[in-house]
Image (tube, rainbow, N blue to C red; front, top):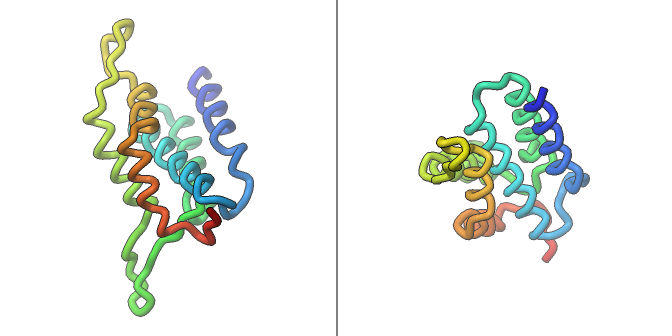
Length: 142
């Protein structure tokens, strides 16, 4: 029950500010993509809880292009092959960063996944990566 409450609060906090289909500003689009990556990080970290998995999948979908995501997926116009997917490269960034992020607590004596995800989420490297996806924002305003 605690996982459901925590995940519900996390989802509410992440989803409430993003009420429009396209972001009004580049900063809002960046925040939306960062939220997507944060949810993907939690999905990578917490693989044991079925309810949490369902909640994270729903939140991940909400921040994806097919949900409320502000970034478009670039395709070759002739072949329709994906040439750049900011959501996939964000998921790849998180998947690479998570195992290399140290976040052990003294009280737990093990890696704390939430702390690790927050370290990644708040890192300069992640912010720079997200800013690097600006070329794929749908209808950006500065």
